[in-house]
Figure 1 (cartoon, rainbow, N blue to C red):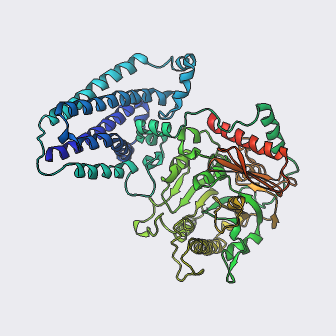
Figure 2: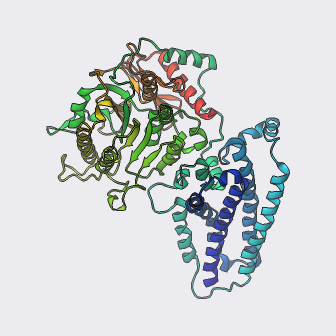
Figure 3: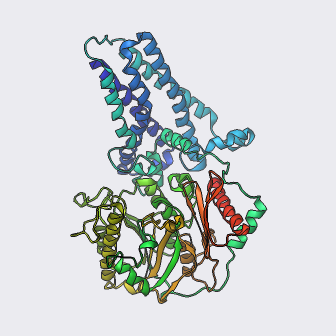
Length: 611
């Protein structure tokens, strides 16, 4: 049994070494950019990248590990031949991926994913696209790598298996099953909450260093599984001319801009509140308000009482707020760095105005590939669980909101010569809602009671934060935008559209207006509105509208799991994309409303596919 256990470690280790060599080759191939990296950053490429190498090695080792369990019952030559063939086929495929990836980065500036498969249906265009590539050098590299890898495969399998003896006493299958099950640890990237994704290995301000840490094979198969190569829009409902007509009508700008600020170059703080639903605003339970501080604060700025989230997840909400980009029904664009790098984003606009950009979050930014997006956004400072003290780890997700609020205040005690554009993402009102309240405010151990207590806690800490911020010299020149990242199904109302309604408030010392706006608006409108207020070209935020006009189009659209919702004034229409049928409706829904909603879904998703 000893030699079989050794073989499992050797086999797994072979793939890890293989991928380390592949990364070394990638860095050598792009030596001009590699030379710009410091030794510390270069070490970080391997140190961080090995997590993805271990993950890919884990996937590739599952079948061989299980197969070794049956080695005692199979003829040695048959076992050896099948395992050798399996491994050699993988070497052929993965080496091809490694070599193609070398030139893909030169051409497209990102690592190989399933995108090239789009061109297989148009071979002439595909050949034309790669005609200038160094074919001879790549082919020679492929052959050389294949020979070297194949030699080691032979040495590992043929030489090791020859020494195996028949196990007479103890069955080996349970041991192998245990080792196979243990592969889930490297596959997921460790014991953390967030499963393996590109953000897991991102670590540097250098985009090339981050990209170099990505495992090309993992990246390719991940995109393949997620069908990022699919260019067929499953939500094709209308002809292009009808879509164009509907979109022109929906996005027609009317009225004149309203000036809501008393500062020309204010600091901007966007607080994106986890699972913040409009349903709890002004809500009382046994005489106690769920969000008492926010209820008072919304009277000190411009409050939108009918705002809607674009999607149903934090990663989709971030994109909607910061890039003004709509959520997808089944995918999430944030998980595809090759697409997110094409999105507009407020940080870069504000950096062009000489702003300092910062992101604060108490959890792991690796979750849902958020860190990849933040690095693409060029945030100058990212404060998350990995940069906060280890002894502050208080919850399943990270540190509680009070720690993050305090850290923000501490960082802004010193007056800098630059204004700031900051994003603060809260976390405490996320499941499992284990907030540090001295005593339970809303009695009960059911999910809704726990959720209400978590909102109460974040509201309390947010209130303390704002009260402290008011005493700072930068407050009078600051606009604070508070918005939910997405809504929540609780408390239940029986109306699915209510689950997407979120609070949105523009307040702070730089905001002079005081009123409540009841028009239907969206998260997507924030980027557009901020751009126009700051005098930034706003055309790139094409999916949003200016919140501050004397007249607005009164509608919003949101996506959920393969379905969408369309709100237009008092009318609501929810549709199931899979069954191609209405889920629910409210008000006098006309054929025009249905066509407009389908046009939005089709147009939004087609734009995502085209990225």
